[in-house]
Length: 107
Image (tube, rainbow, N blue to C red; front, side):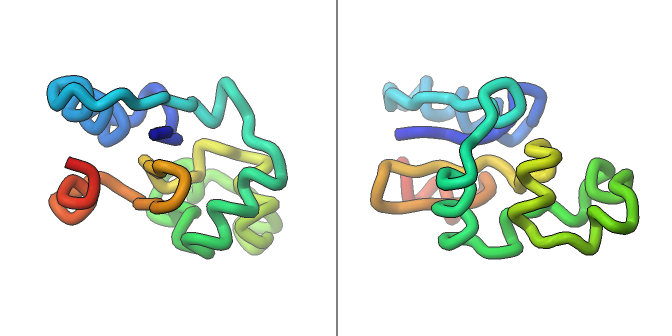
């Protein structure tokens, strides 16, 4: 399994801790320090659409007007920290966020 996120994200860190405590091996990929390719973003955008961009974040509010109006793929390629987090996948299933519904899928 792969957890996509950023190392400073509290939800990502909570998810990683829960998986470790449950003995579930998960690979963490920090999308800021290990940038994703256009093809990798395309897979996640096909799964989640515009919901993949966290429009409530300070990072989004700090974007210039042109970038805020751009398509999600351009926003994420330019500023990976805009990704709503965490994204978890086992290669066939994908989840976005960290809540009880997501936990029920993986644990």
